[in-house]
Length: 361
Ligand code: AMP
Ligand code: MG
Image (cartoon, rainbow, N blue to C red; front, top):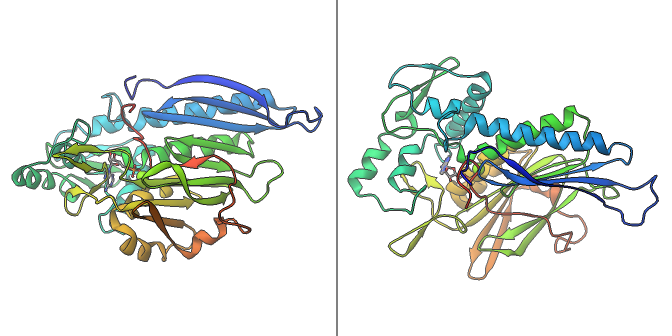
C-alpha cells in the first residue's frame, strides 16, 4: 500500500472482554485495526454494556482523527499542507493552516530546547543518506551541501508563517506525526466521553483511564532494544502516551554498516545505535518529540535533560551485549509497577517506532 493513501480499517471486531460474566457487568471492547500514516493502527475502546454503538462510533471518529492528521502532515503524497509548504518558493513566507502552524511552532520550539537534537527540518539530510530508499553514505561534499539546507538554514518561522530558505529543504514529520495523530485521537475520544481506551500507532501508545478492575493502569511491556520479542521493562500507565525511539530495527545498510533512521542534525549523520529510549507523557506530541530528541542526545546528555522534566517519564535502555542496562529519571517512578517490576503484566508492548508518515515496511 502506498503510505499516504487513505487508511483502511481492516477489521472491526466486538468481543466480550469478560467471558462468562453476567450481561449487566460485562465489559465490551471495540477493537479496530488498520493502517494509517504508513504504519499499523490499533484502537481498543472499552464500552459499558449499554453503550456499544456509541463506542463503535467513537472508534470510527478516532480513526478519522488519525486520517485527518495524515492528510495534514504526510510528505509521501503531494496534496497535504506540509507537502505544499515543502515545495514553496524560496524566501516567501507561507501562511499555514492554524493546526499546522501550531504543530510546527511546537516542533521548532523543541528543536531550540533540545539544542537541535530534534529538528524536523532534516529533509535534505534524509535525502543525502537516502533514508527513504536503500541508503547511501554521502560524500563529504554532498553532506556539506545537505547540512547547508537543513535546520535554521532550511526554514524560518514568522508570525503564523514559515519561509522555505533553500531549494533542497523540506520538513519531515516522521518524528512527531504519530504523536500529533494520537493527540488528535485522544481529544476526539475524550470529547465523545470515552474513559477507557488503548491505541497503538506504529509502536507509540496512547491510553485513557485504566482497564476495568485495574485502577493502577494499563500494563505496558517495553521491548528489549535489539530484540522486540524480549521484554526489558514493565510500566503501568493511565492517561498518557508512551513513545519509544531506537535505531536497531529500522534503517538501511551501507557498506555492511547498519544506519539508523534517526539523524543527529548537529552532525548530519545517523545517531549511533546505543539502545532505545521510552518516554511517558500526558501529551503524545511531547512523548514523540522527546523520544527522538533523547535518542539523539544519548543516555548521558539525554538523562541530564530528562532530569529537568518533572512530568515526563524517561527510560533509557542501553544495549550491553545481549542485555540492556536501564536508566531512568525520577518522573518515571510513578509509572513503574509498585509490586514487582518484573511482573509479566501482559503482552502489550511499546516498540522502537516504525515510520509515522511513510511507506509501509
Ligand atoms: P522517531 O521514530 O519518532 O524517532 O522519528 C524518526 C523519524 O523522524 C525518521 O524516520 C525521520 O523521518 C525523522 N527524523 C530523523 N532524525 C530526526 C531528528 N533528529 N529530528 C526530527 N526528525 C528526525
Ligand atoms: Mg518521535
